[in-house]
Amino acid sequence: MSVIKSLIKELEQAKKTCPRCNGSGVITAPEWEIYWELRRKENPDKPGYLEETKHILPEVDEETLCTECEGDGYILSEDAFELICLLRSLFSKLGL
Image 1 (cartoon, rainbow, N blue to C red):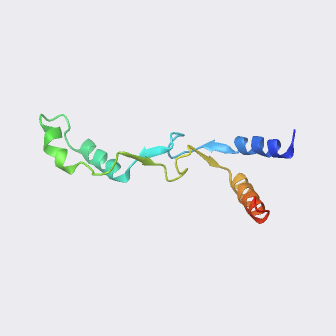
Image 2 (tube, helix red, strand yellow; image 1 turned 180 degrees about the horizontal axis):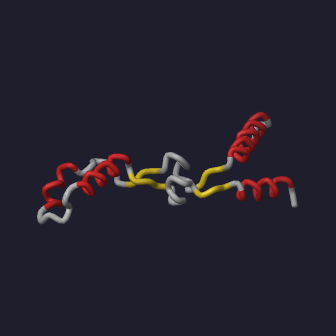
Image 3 (cartoon, one colour; image 1 turned 45 degrees about the horizontal axis):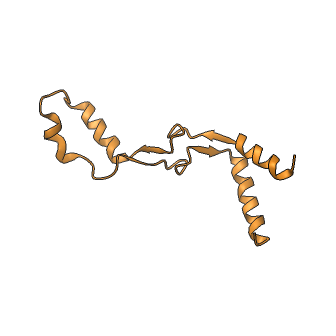
């Protein structure tokens, strides 16, 4: 096996499912987390509740890219991340 293929295999093994988004790459926007928490504390079963609270709906999308993994759904171990930084630096110096 070539060195590059070996490194690729090791990097794949260094991927861990992102604990924040559970691998989906998206999370609930903080504004919506606050909204849903408020809804849980109130009485959402009350007739007309949704209509009454429509004006407080957040004006942002409910889902946003995960800030932990930047939407990839996985994070790299610290060693793997350092290796990638080293390789980027090396390839940059070589003009690749």
